[in-house]
Amino acid sequence: MQLFFWGGSTGGLGVLLLITATSVAVLGYFGRGARGENLWRRAIAPAIASVLLLVISYLAVTNLDALFGVDPGTGPAFVVPLLLLAMLVIGTVWGLVLRVTNRTVYDGIGLGPRAAAASATGFSALLDDEEGRR
Image (cartoon, rainbow, N blue to C red):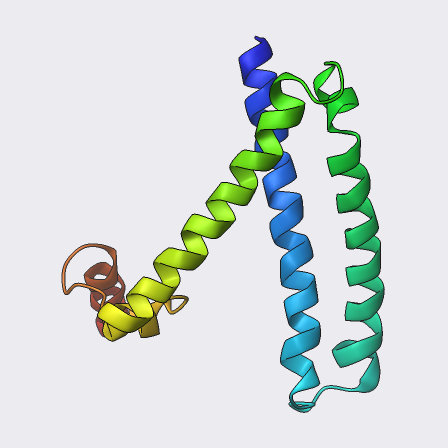
């Protein structure tokens, strides 16, 4: 039962950190150009969200021991941040490796089934077949 709780809490913290990173990335995206959005949508609202999410993320990480119900610096309160950091580093390194070694796959990241690297079978083929019937 405790392992399930630790796993769910770890996943929740990971999602919170991803949402925080995405919120900060929105600021960078719209910082390069307005893209037809007003000041509220491209700067003010994302800045407020980013600040609040950074504060919440900081509080979650610094109080991880209370969340897991363990002594500070022991067990999951020590291991979980290291695991999340390791996953960030591994994912970043893998993305850089793909950018250099397999540019087609790298360019398809984030495009879903419409990616150039998507196979002609499986889910992408099913979507193409459904569109052909309409």
